[in-house]
Structures are given as structure tokens and as C-alpha cells.
Image (tube, rainbow, N blue to C red; front, side):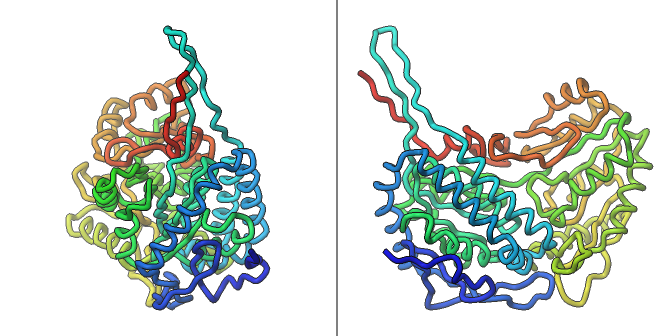
Length: 477
């Protein structure tokens, strides 16, 4: 079969889905806006139900042959995908910046991370386990593919978080139907075109569409597993939908990650690290530090440093060379963040920095810091998912841990101290799937990532995340 080569890809026009190894248009389209300009940068295909059925059918058709490909050969193809991403960083990053809003340097970094995710996944293995029972019977326990995976990818890191799902699913021998967010479908669609000549037809299918498409995908009887990253509210709806056919689910959901800063830290250094741990990607990171508990003894100095950094980093169009913070990605999220700001102002909380009146065009909110609001404040209880954070005073470690754990979310958290032994003790007391010591957002394709409480179900990354894309099969003799 003759397939399109990556050299023919026009990254800024002609956006098509990939179904069954072919680039496919749709009868209808929808505009994708640049959040910095509020102007359309292209029209994405609006996948019909018939086309969705075709994508699922293509994946099911490709599955028998793909799962029989030796794992080592599948790993080699993941490495080829990584190489292709490395070769196309610049044009793909420009498109990503225009649709997502993040600074161009961050877009390039995201694509580089995605390439590393494919490489890292390629190093994992699924060896069978053999053991002898007391009866003398020999048991071989295999990890076999789940089947066809429906992957729903969010708008904050569409290429990287797509790689989190695509790489392990392919390595484990599954086929996929991937649906990016309707806010950021374009770079993912172009990723599909880039990989047409690498993967067999039907192994990876990428579709795009509006809000009606997600439920059609999660309910589809031809899908065996759903992997979803997004809000907890939507995750519950995905789980209900998937339950109709007992699909397996991996849900990476919301977080309201606490950071506990002890009084023995280097204030300037830690405040700088946590500033970017809060505001990188304009706060639109599931594992951003979202509640910062700072000891009374250093609170004022810490707050002053954070405030100075916030005032020095004015958001702007991600294509500008000197911009380090872009806009909020979409109008709906802009309104949610603004609502939290308005609530804090109405309740008389003190602002250390101001969000600004907003630019005439674009979804811009300056880094906004609220000074020691009460624990029941919405800005403390809810996940902002934007450039907004409360600084919170505490007097004792026990108090800080109790307050940090008082959340329905438990995705990640961080402890900051010069005393590593004490930091480790506190980390063991924190309710979270991941706890970092003296760093934040340190992730890897080989480190498992899992949310507790309302922050998710299942695991991503590492061998444990790879297992999520398999079923157990026992051969007994």
C-alpha cells in the first residue's frame, strides 16, 4: 500500500484525520482558535459517527496482526516515532503554540519530551512469569493486549499526554483510536500524518470532533479500554459511560497539589522553583503546585520573592521571543479562573499581585497570588487550573500535613527542606500518588504516576502503567 510520506505534510493547513492508514477529511469542520489572538488558525474535521465506526473497525481489523508482532519490533517502531518527532520539532511546535498558547520554547520542550516518552516506553518489557504450584503444576502468567484503546487527550499538553497513552498502548500490542480535545486537535492531527509511513494501517487512528464525539467513543462497543486525562467531573462521566460494556479505564483526573515549605530552606531558591512549579504553562498543569503552605518564620520573605517574580513575568503571545507565560488556553477556562478571582475579591481576600484588567484580545491573566486566605476559600478548595495560587501560613508540621491532606484530590505534592530525612518523613504522611522532595513536576516514562482519592483510577507510565494496557492470561499445565 502506498502511503503519504511526512515530507508532504503542511503543518499550518489541510488538517485531516488518520483512519485506517489514510488521511481523511470530514463533511463538516469546526474552527480552532489561537488563545492569544482569538482568531481561527485552521478548521479541524468534525468526525461523524460513521467515521468513528470506521476508525474503530480499522483498529479491530489491524489488531490480530499487530498483537502478533514481537514486542521488540514494536519497541523499534516506537523509537522510529521518537526520531520522527525529533525531525519535525520546529514546525510542529509552531502549530502547538498557535493552538495551545504556550511559549514556543515550551512547545518545543513538550515535543522533545513526547519523543523521550516513546524512547522510554521502548525500554520497557512484558516478560512472562513462570512458577510452580505446590501441586507440581507449572503456571505461565502472560500479559496480553487489552484490544482496542480509546484515548482521550486534554488540551494542556496534547502531544506529550498523547504520547503517555499511545506509547505504552502500542508497545503492549493494542491498537488505538485517539481523540484530542476540540480546543487543541491540530498538532495531534499532524502527528497522525507524520506517522502514516511508520505504523501499519489501522494500528493508530486519530480523529477530531466536538463535545458529542467523546461519549460516542467511550460508549462504543468496539472499544475495550478507555484512557482519559481531564477533569474529575468529566472523568466520572467517562466511567459511567464505559461501565455499559465493562470497559477497563485509566483516569488521570484533577489535582490540588500542596507544597509544604519548611523554615530551613533557601527562600530565594525555593520560591523561584515553586513560582515556576505553579505558573509554568500558565498554571494549566495537573501536577502544578496549587496550595503553598509556608512556615510563619519565612512567610513574608517567601511571599515577597514570589510577588516579585509574578510582576516580572507578564503573559503574552507565545510566539514572541521574550514571553515565558502564555494565555489561558480557552475562553471557558479563562472564565473559570476569573470566577475564582472574582470570588476571592468579593470576600475581601488580600491580593499580593493583580490579574490585571486583561488585554483587549486574548485570554490573558497575569500570575495572581492571594495572601493567606482561609482554608474553606474556593481558591484553596478548588483546582484553579490557571495562573492563580494561594499562599498559606502554618506554624507546625503537623498542622501543615493535616491541612494539606484535607482535600478530595490527591494527585501529587511536594516537600521542601534542607533536612532530607525530615522531608522524607513528611512525604510519607502526605496523601498523594506522587510526592517530590525539593523539586516539583519531576516525571519520567519509567516512573509510575497514579492519583489517589478523586484524582484518578489506574496508573500511567513505568512498567505499572504498561500493565494497564494488558490483561492477565494464565497458562496452566
